[in-house]
Length: 270
Length: 314
Image (cartoon, rainbow over all chains, first blue to last red; front, side):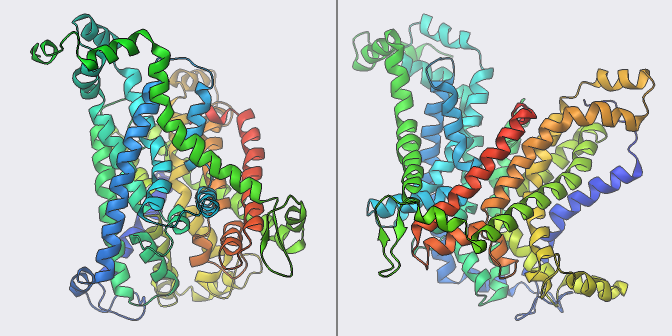
């Protein structure tokens, strides 16, 4: 429907601008508060600006631990999702089999259903099987909803790549593994990277499933949630909030630029 | 590309023979590809979901307070008490209100993006919607705690404008207000709309982008007023996108328990009830029942949405 850019009615322009401001002003306010010199309240406008809370937050052991755990979980969950998502995409691409459509549904289910359902069912399953909470229980939860992100990206790319290249490679005597390594992998590399970036951001930021599968461990979002429910040092929380914004925006922007010239921009569907 | 990588393929190497076997046997290859993801999602994830469903038929013994692992419909019966139905109705009403508000805010934005923004502007708008979609859920909820705080920016702005009385009047309304901004219904509602808005914008953009330009021109040529064109051509074609977006906003609101916990009053939503039942109360069967409620509501909702063609726009 993209037409020649006609002049927009003023009301429409205002409504669109207002919607974008609504989405982003709150984030800007968080950044502002991270520099506020006020310690005890959320007073606006901040009486003075300071950068000292960044130093305080960066020196905190509990934040180090939570950040470290979050980064490790996101890395391992992303790797698992990369493997499983690519396998599923390869299986669905170019083959017909019984229940093929169900696979897509199955993959989408963990993010289509409210997170609390995934969380509580995993928790109750861990409980029944008497699996203690550990690093791996968090990873299992995260990988489950990250698979679909990789799957979507890789499948979209596979569908647009030419099968004749693969046939040519086979004709020239390459075996299946060589064809994968030298033909298929270079073809899907950027979509793998984009999928991985999005999966990483999704995992790094996740709170709802994590509260059910973490036990006593504290990822960065869990650390933040405890601070929100029982505030101890508000300025430090503000700094961590800014840190989280930065650490999730970067991979998403990267995923966007990796796929922007293609038909299906990463992140179009969550 | 040089021929080096292929030259190394000894005809009788193990890999080569394996590759040939798989090529001749596509079913085996398919099985190899499918088994890991299916084991993960099918066995682990679906298995967990089914265990949860199963546990909804257990019940908590009133005297010992322990979960009895025997089939019973007792826990399901408890769902239909006034207190629990109240939670379900309140959550569904909130989900519906949030969905309507999200459509009202998202549609003009999506329409502007598709019809009027230049290509560069469109990419910028797209990023501006996508970034909040993927990131910082908790931080974005937290931002409203800062905004709605008693000493925060809302107070400051209304005082500058001399509108403090209006805010207080709004908060004293029965169905909308609450004891303070960050514990009022209005507060919870605003945060829900804020958090789920991107989920509504992107499907509508996708739907609008697929409206053929020729149809709009044809409507204009046939003498339709722009408003008429919108009502009879654009809106019906955009409806699948709206329906797809509403699936997200509706489902996400039904299951969320973080937002009303941070910005909200004392009366719980479904998500909070689930959380409390499985946590401190130790009543996993009741939590399971309460988890199935949003699934059931979503089932009904999806059936209706499917009729409207919502899945074409996903």
